[in-house]
Amino acid sequence: MFVPSSPYREPGFGAWKQGLEALPPSEVLIREAEETAQDGRWMRWIQAGCESTYIQSVEYNVSKIAQQFVLLAEIADCPVGLCCVAAGRTDSDPIFIQLVAVVPSARRRGVGLALLSAAAGWQPQRDIAMATLDDNVAARRLNKRFAQSIGGDIQRVPVRRFRPFDLGIAPGEHHRPWMIDRQKHA
Image (cartoon, rainbow, N blue to C red; front, side, top):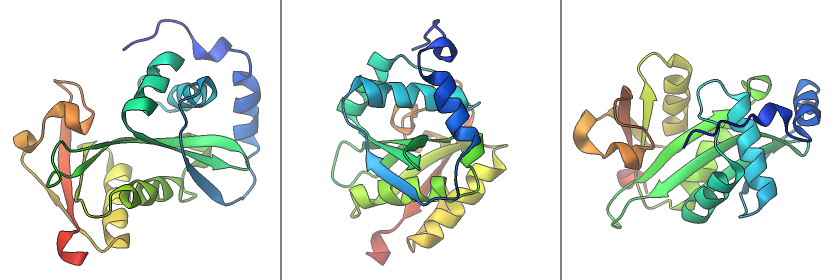
C-alpha cells in the first residue's frame, strides 16, 4: 500500500536520522517487533531510510506485525533494520523471508546476517525461501553467507515454484527466487 504522506516530516524522524549518523560500534540487538504504534513507526522510518523498500503507514506495519514474524535490529537502542518472515501454509513448506532492510549507515556491520539468523531460528525445522533482484549482488552475497552460516545449501529455483505473494514481491517485479535447503543438515 503506497502512503502519500511523508515520514520525513514526522515528529522524531530527524532525531532518529541524526542518531543513525552517530552510531557507535556497538553490538547488534535483534528483537521481535511488537504490535505497537512505536514499532510500526520504527518500521516506517527504516523503510524511508532504505532505497529499495516501500514506505508503509504505521497502521499497515502494525497489521504486518500481527500477521507475520517481524524482527527489528537495533544498535545502541537505535532501530537500523527489519526482517519480515511468513510461514508456509503447510508444515512441509519453507519459511519465506519477504524483506530484509538495513539503513545504509548500519550496513557492513553484520545486521543483515543477524536478522536472517534470527529469522531462521524462528522455525528451524523448515527450509528457507527468499527472492532477490538479479542485479542486487550484495543481497545475493549475503544470502550465500547466511546459507553457509546455518549449514544449508542455497540454490536458485524456478520462478514459478512459489507464489509472488509468499515471497513478498509484487506481480511484475523481476526477482530471482532462492531456496536454502537445511533439512538434511538438521
